[in-house]
Image 1 (tube, one colour):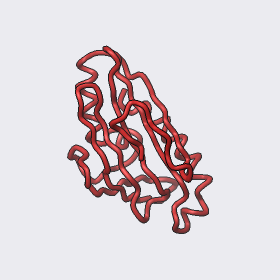
Image 2 (cartoon, one colour):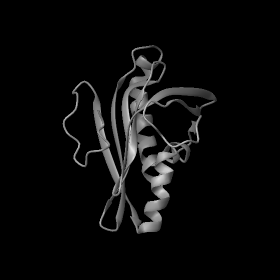
Image 3 (cartoon, rainbow, N blue to C red):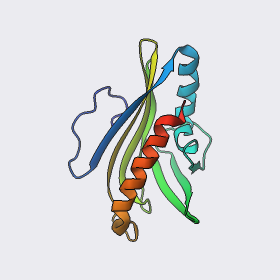
Image 4 (cartoon, rainbow, N blue to C red):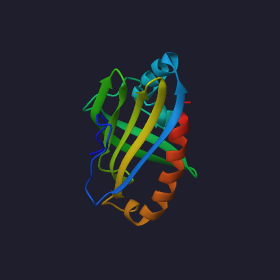
Length: 157
């Protein structure tokens, strides 16, 4: 749904809240080499305060638990990698939420080049999870998601 292989993100299911944000990371081959490895090894999440129970590069079908500690609580986010792109000017992956995740949807982390410039893009589709207590907390989760997205955009710098 978040189409990490595509430069232009086509229309998506209107039942999901759609977000796309990008940041210029810098320039050059050394930066490109570093961030392509970092993005595939979940550095966006780990540098943003999450723990990921794998150190391997993301691969389609990987089922992982992402964990975050907030206000003395441990929140586990079960996810599954759905798509991977590894091209000379575009590297990244998408993952979908699994039952038990606080929201329902998909997210993609993509690094891409335009000339010598290296950019990072985060795409997400989100809707309320079907289970409680997350369903009722969805409005607060959207605020948290906005804060975390800003951290994501700084994570690979």
